[in-house]
Length: 339
Image 1 (cartoon, one colour):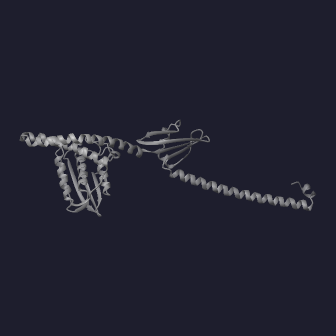
Image 2 (cartoon, helix red, strand yellow; image 1 turned 90 degrees about the vertical axis):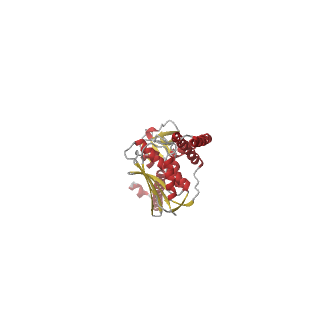
Image 3 (cartoon, one colour; image 1 turned 90 degrees about the horizontal axis):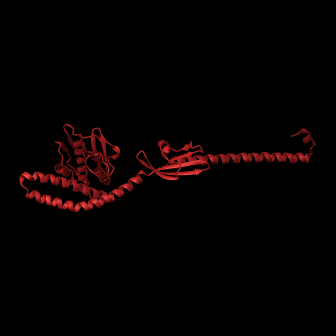
């Protein structure tokens, strides 16, 4: 302020000026404090938004008007190439990327573009399985009656055939039994697994395995080794027998596809830490695609419909157990709690 002007003021005017300056200083402090509060609130809100963005199950990108990324979450960072596959012309879209399906949503706001991509592969898989299961169940019902008639006629033919022809009819019966197994597995898969538990000796499952081996049609001279324990377990005997049957047939098919020397299959049971562990080893062809092992209606084998292992996993899950595999040495195994 000009010094001459200040000198020209009387005492009252100076007092008024001083009070005005004090008020202005106080207002400055108030504004400064309000700015700090606003800044703290903004930072807190920004941190909250960042946390929300990071925990989103969807991949999220925010682009500027030049379509450059200014923000992306960790799900987006997991799929850096996914964004380039998304068309920015469609506000809503579905796309397949590297074997997964995504629902894409795009929002334009204040010269910015917000893109989210949600993985819907499981939903797509369930829809596909429901559709395929419905068709499979219908076909299984249609096939069941004529196969039953053919099986009955084959049994009659076997009893009436001459000894030299009985082996031909026996091969026919084995082929019919295979179709019946596929039909029954399909119906069981589509209806859902329900276990009926009872006490029985594990050695009874050894008998089930021997019966399954004898009823399966294979040409390779396979060496079988069955090591079971003499112990009581509480489970669904019929369904566990079906699991072992599926694992044995899977092993036989792998051997026949590989045509290896000295083919062998080992079935070994052990009790460990209050769990029953049962492994089926084979030296057949290696597992080609680990992601398809337990996928229903998908198989890399020359034989089969892709239901055996998927159904077996459901059965073991229903027993509160686990079905899995190891690549070296190659074996499929399941673990069941004994309590």
